[in-house]
Amino acid sequence: MEEKPLYRIGELSKLAGVSPRTIDFYTSSGLIEPEARSAKNYRLYSDETLHRLKRIEQMKKDKYSLDEIKANLNGWQKISSEEQVSGKLTDLQLHLEQLQREVKELEPVLSQLKPSQAQKVIKRLVPSTAACVEALMLLMNKSGFM
Image (cartoon, rainbow, N blue to C red; front, side, top):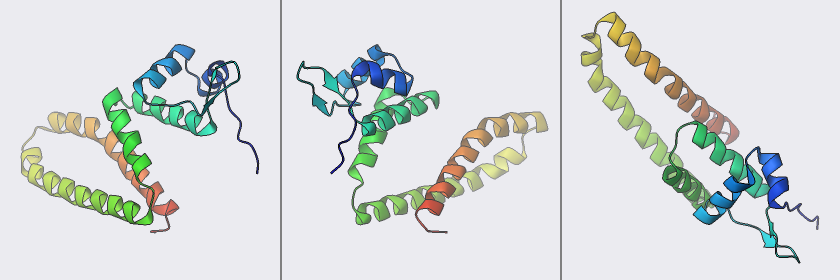
């Protein structure tokens, strides 16, 4: 069995592009956990932690709060069995249907806006909506739904 590489804080910091203080903060906040301790009691982190750090940094760029990031990461960690994945996808589908209904409810209001007002609303919605649709398409393609 192949041994997985383990990184000390300095190495992990360079690989993830974050400061060692950030890693300390995320560790104390419970966002990441060391995989093991070295003989000299250094915290050692795995590749999984590196990927988790990169997800955390991306969510921070997307303006998620630390509580939202923690909930998001914990939610995906809980999804382990096929049944749970199916349930999560069903929840997403129901949520999308709810969003579609809400958009239809807004259509009469949007149609009464002046063109400049409508453009402002659309400019605010389009990037996040497009990103969400793209993420769902990638998920569905990876899981063989399409």
